Image (tube, rainbow, N blue to C red; front, side, top):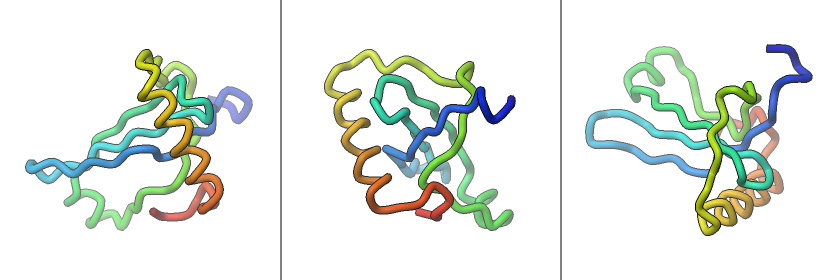
Length: 91
């Protein structure tokens, strides 16, 4: 992936499961596309890898957000995250 291909996405949702996993959703600024990733809390602690406010995602890894309410919620959360954090901030 080149820098021109990447799409900046912001953390809009984080859920902790009872299986020791963290589900994170990053969305495009308009909320129309999202990237989901699941990470073990154990792996995060071992690697010292925090969750950043934003990541750059290949367009092929983005899913369409079809629900209007979800799309609006994601777009509003992106605005909040962008106002409060730099992309590399751990959140």
